[in-house]
Length: 121
Ligand SMILES: [Zn+2]
Image (cartoon, rainbow, N blue to C red; front, side, top):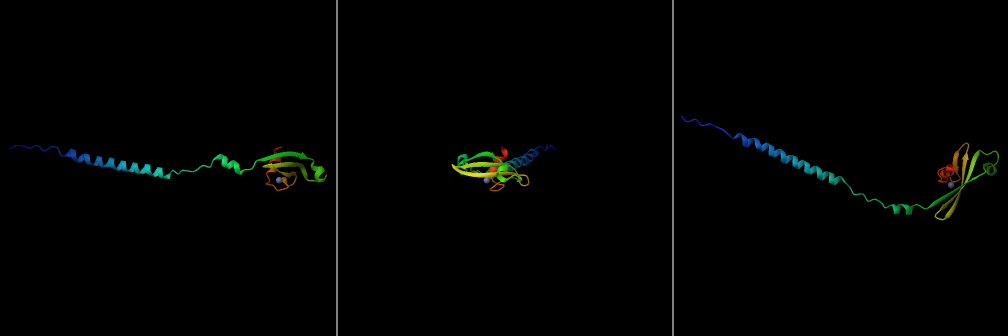
């Protein structure tokens, strides 16, 4: 009786799952790059020249005055400053006080920009 050896047939089955895995990985990578491209937004930056035009040119000249002569001998004002502000050519005068009780303040209020200029001198 002739003996027939059975061989082969296993090699073809092993190749199929490997091919499927490669296709799935490629599809995931492609979708990832598309999402990152969508998230990036183009922001329009304002030119620096446009910002400078909105703000007027301000010049401050600070001069210290005699506080006791202006406010009297019994005043709580320790120091007194005359601040001449020029905004686009038009002058504006400030009187900035350094008070023992209230601290620094301008005749226009504490928030007046002349207060900061008087403090530096
Ligand atoms: Zn002021």
